[in-house]
Image 1 (cartoon, one colour):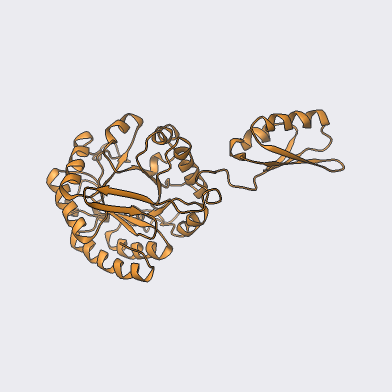
Image 2: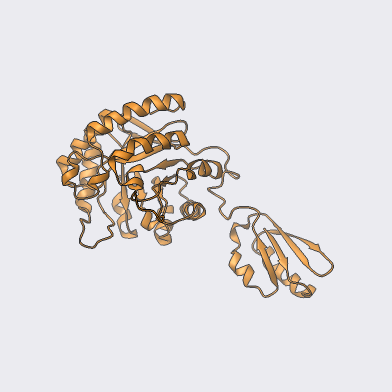
Length: 340
């Protein structure tokens, strides 16, 4: 970090600022010009709040040479993070040359529905089963999920089909219900729910963190930093589309963020083409594109009766369409030297 001091500030005031900065654990190198002083900060500058420094009446400019996130930064952790899962005899991984496919219904609607879909997606080659027990919805009148009962159904499906499960947490009070969940999802609307992120940082259950509806890459990485700062380093990042000015799809799938995230962070990155496009017929094409972009996996919605789905039926693949897509993805994965 570089701090430029305003002209004609007294040495006493500069010394006080340096002393305050050094108390935060950084080393300060002073460069004295004819009328202006520049301070170079060396060390863990992530502990320094830019806005607080700028508020000092003697400071002219603050320039960060390094990103404000440390734990998620590839500079400090050059090796890729790989998450391993085991459910009975079934082993799965996210990262490390694998292309993990997470599949299942948008929401849990019944025991029969979830178990049937679980068997279908496992047969087609999915590594994880997804399903929403608690559903954040834009309308208060829309189906909000089955809650705890839906979570029980997912856990039953986990035992029946042998796939690790992925489901979304919405608030801190629900975390204690998720002890047997394999991958806890933080949805786009909660990406900057910092109190929730802090509590998830205290757990040791892997977290799937979705990018916010209108969030920058840095904001996504800082959200992951919140979780890692609490001690939980098992995080998967998910690009699920962002808001734009055109509405021909549900969201804009920002595939360019995938290689950029792979450059900036060691955390695995997956893509959700279902929520990004909003149309089931677009999911196979965007899944192939995600694989080509270097993603570590995808999360797609599969429903055995989309026309009567209680949530997002239009973007859900039928089981046979999902199986066809998986067969195609395996061919693409061979080219990319990835395992499905």
